[in-house]
View 1: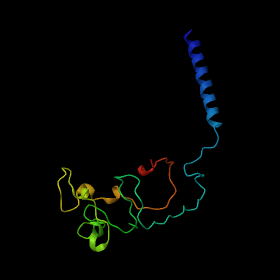
View 2 (view 1 turned 90 degrees about the horizontal axis):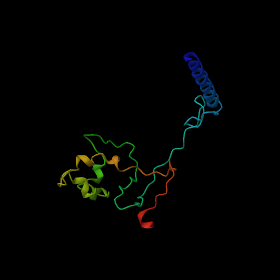
View 3 (view 1 turned 60 degrees about the vertical axis):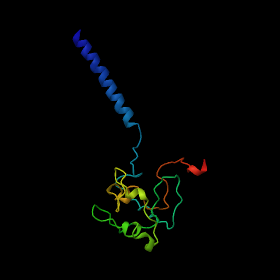
View 4 (view 1 turned 120 degrees about the vertical axis):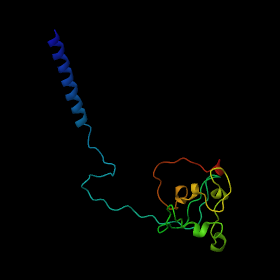
Length: 146
């Protein structure tokens, strides 16, 4: 009796495995994420140019986008070239917008004379603006349009 049960289970397992393989093979061609076969050479995507001028914000606390190129800007733990124009001590003579006072508050909300370490890496919140197509669908409406 044990032999018959084992033979039956083996037959069912073999049938399921073969039918699963058949379904997998009939599923059609798998499309790669890049949209083409691996050995196919695709043209380079279009380069999008930096937009000049300031963009309107969509909500009250939105970090403004950067209206100029940051291609050669150095921002690391010792240097932040954004501050050459946007620090409160330089902004007036450079004609650049001054950083918000929140950038000069430490974690305990104490006022500092220099930019707080938590706000040092500008491109953590601020991004260069460019006229590019949306990566995903979006139904967001600005707060003033509601």
